[in-house]
Length: 297
Ligand code: PEP
Ligand code: MN
Image 1 (tube, rainbow, N blue to C red):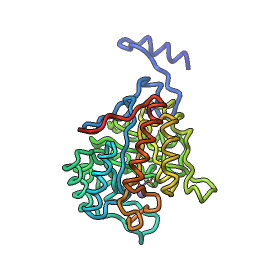
Image 2 (image 1 turned 45 degrees about the horizontal axis):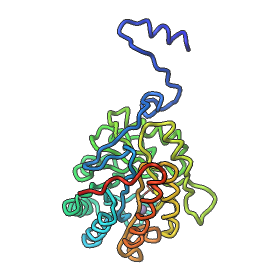
Image 3 (image 1 turned 90 degrees about the horizontal axis):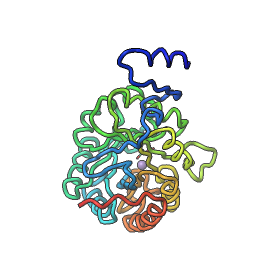
Image 4 (image 1 turned 30 degrees about the vertical axis):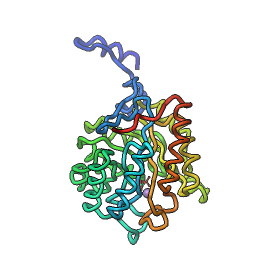
């Protein structure tokens, strides 16, 4: 409507009129050209460096989590992940240690200095989880839980928004829009694979969604090769593909004893394999023009 544009421009006090053609407004590059940089303690996401978050799928024992946190830090990882509240496909599967799990994560942060990213599953738990989490995670299964999105949008913590396994890129950006429109500007998009007809790659890692989301939006985009593939030996190659495609970060599952992990053992890397992955990620990140974020002090 070019005629409306002229009308608005004529109003006193209007400096410029920007036409936004996308259904997501605040998340769009049309509104904000420059990349959004999100600070999580000493870590900056989206500033041209690659950030690596790693840790167990679910928080189990204090000893395992501490051991993992030390290994992640030693290998050059920047944040610790771990679920205290777990969304599970089956109601009979392990659903997390809850508050006790948050305490263990806080202890690991106190020792290593790694900021924590952990999932919030229920809108009623946002304040509870935000007391410990440096960054909240919204899981794939909750990407369109609009009550949860609104609640996290009112919260002052950065958010890692997993793409719904059934979601289009547009639906994913609209989910981010829920939080931006509630006043939380710090949303990081996470590609974690989408449903396809191939069971042996678990979910299909939509590698093109990374540069596409970065073109459509100013928000940082990270890749999750662990949930995409479901197999530890597919994690490194897919991680390297994500980095090559321009991801601003990776989130990777690591466990000291994958055979006995309470969830997602088959896709968890041992600390030794994570250390190997970091070496190759370092090389590909440099080649892709987004070198690894400096290690934490
Ligand atoms: C997780 O990060 O452990 C998780 C459950 O991921 P997703 O929501 O992507 O399945
Ligand atoms: Mn998991």
